[in-house]
Figure 1 (cartoon, rainbow, N blue to C red):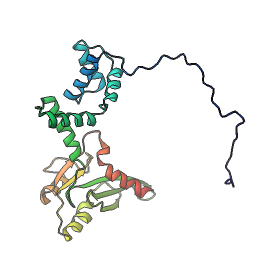
Figure 2 (cartoon, one colour):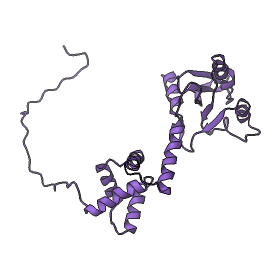
Figure 3 (cartoon, rainbow, N blue to C red):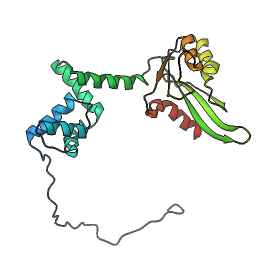
Figure 4 (tube, helix red, strand yellow):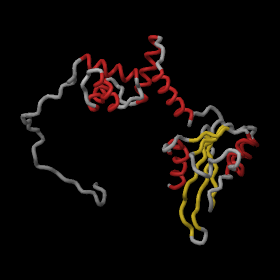
Length: 239
């Protein structure tokens, strides 16, 4: 029995499909010379940080004429289309052949290591992420903010509402909670908002970290998704 509001449509057309002749030219798997393809793959491993446009430009300097789109097509065929995939192939090649990393490769590997460290966690208190969430406007009170602290290992979270951006949640709730369990907070991850960052000798939050010997890690510039774990928690509360 059909559900109320559902609409069923039936077609009187025959189910057999009629094949039409196509005038389109067949799409060839490889449209470049083998030596050009080898050069593109080799550059992806030697310079993993290069994007397709940069790689295309560098290859043209060496006499290999290929567009950025052509570079990407070759990368896709060899599973090299992303920065992470190119680094993975590089590490596998180094482990297998025992190659010595170049300066460009070391920079690329260090860059990925920093990205991993932002959310990498090993135990309770090892990394606590903190963020400010704008809740809305309340008549008679003004803007309402929520401060969130979340242990990235256990997913234990603390939240508190404010009318100003004063991040005392860590000292008010999170730190006493972990101290009662005999757990030390080693590192805090925040964005670069003014409530968290400032002159180390004057900013209250920075002074607080120095007093409790907590390492303060900041997300990279224009990279708010680095605190995705707090954003996910905010979405859960909102829902």
